[in-house]
Length: 162
Image (tube, rainbow, N blue to C red; front, side):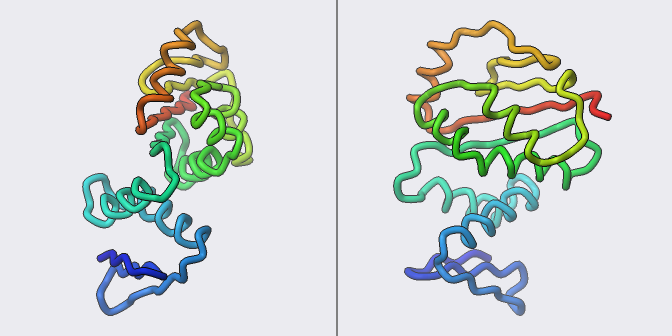
């Protein structure tokens, strides 16, 4: 159950155990991020949390980050969180810059053992990086897509990682 109030957000996974979060932006966004990451797709809590993020004042984009190929869900969440927290990535997306280097670099900040030779990346379905190497793509078209489409989907695969 998720309730929006004027100055705080109340999140309760079970009605008997509510957790009040004051409106400090970092705590709210961290909580919403955790809910979106941990809840199963289609759950009402995940959907409502994503809606709050989409409705944020000044938010130009809603970025979905899918990470695959790691041994555990926790490792994939660490990589996704590092990418999501990257100011350089947010700046690139806002400016319509499909900069694969910012995404791959941010993944490295998760301090996990993976070989970049096995990293591949798609931005909104366009392959921009495969097996550790940038691939040719229509930069102008992808840039326009980032500028005109509010939803951005990043798919990072680390298949074959040690």
